[in-house]
Figure 1 (cartoon, rainbow, N blue to C red):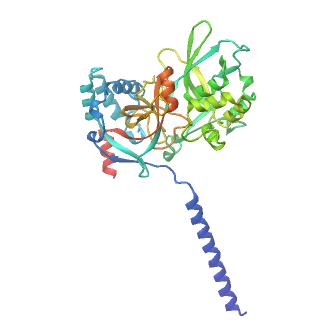
Figure 2 (cartoon, helix red, strand yellow):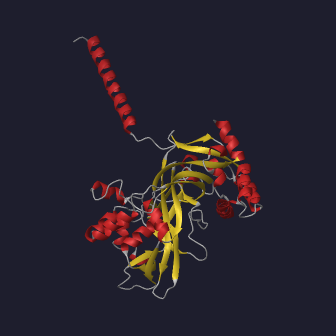
Figure 3 (cartoon, rainbow, N blue to C red):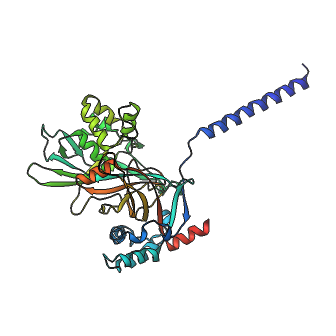
Length: 403
């Protein structure tokens, strides 16, 4: 083989290798999951099915609670897509002038100050909407053989980092951990905490009777503990260990213990109670662990730091949706009896909470309140739906100009 032939061979071989690399990279890109992305399209109040009939004065009361956290901050501070604190100061001042209970005036207020935008995830406007509630547990102020499960206070060593303070494209993202030898490391998992990883820190807030009830309390984020003397303590979310939430219903479906059609809070709990030897291992698949605090006064308290309103407070993914914004939700309220159809449920909500399972641009968790009916509705709810985010007029003008 001549020198020129060798050179041609080497060039051809190099080209073949480059082509393989390009093809491999292209296949890698195709195999990567598509990141969810919020898109907003201008709409109008006439597009909101049931808007005129909804008693939105209830939502205005919830919005006024959010205003307590928004008003008075630095006017230039941006609330992601929802404008600035300065925009919201004007809105909150105007909201205070609306007579509570006057639905006509409440409708006029929202129509004066906001513009609806229909939300979608890369063009898909449909999302999943679930429910949560405030459970009641039996408990003790002191450790007792009948109350073996401790609800833990937030450890002083737990650190939560708002990544949005380091980079604008990380707005809404947070990580949690603890510092070990000068490095931020993952916090212990649910299983590690159950095995005693935090036993030396004296974190017990209260003891409860049922480990399965304690597990579901962590999923709900707040609840009530009733003592034998009849006193009741309200407990609320105080922090989370930073590990991602895993829905154990997926595991039970994979085991063919449940089906996608039958999985619910009630059926998951029934399975755990019927399989005590497996229950702990299954619950530990959810590495996320929630810490609690005592709530004095009105509660429960959502992630925004204000009391939640049954049927008006919505948990969202704050990676995409800032807390405090009004959201028009169109979904289905589940029936309380098996085999019956749910009913359309269209109403104005306020984004006031978050949740470990609430991930994505078109995803929400409806707070149903306290009591047996709230538990039944929340446990059964897994409804498709869509929503409109109501943006301040100033922010919506800028959003429309960007399109």
